[in-house]
Amino acid sequence: MADDDYVYDEASGEWISAADAAERAGAADTLEVRDSVGNLLADGDQVTLIKDLTVKGAGQTLKRGTLIKAIRLTGDAQEIDCKYDGIKGLVLRAEFVRKR
Image (tube, rainbow, N blue to C red; front, side, top):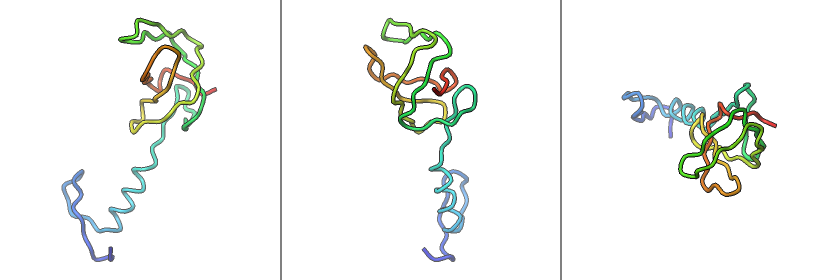
């Protein structure tokens, strides 16, 4: 797109220049997910639970200190996707984990 092109930004409801739209799209891709103490989390990190958590639908409680391996980040800054024995599709909130 040329510099004089404008696109409609649905989030703000305004027409903005194409350069500004590309800059906003680049900034939106850099999502920071932080654990309970402020450490930056990334895909594949290992985390430890800081609190006992009751898992809904599984009838199981994950105890404090449980190690969760190979997390994956979701599109949400507060949620991480992970696997644990016997629990399929486990999603944890970042505020209840600490990076190992």
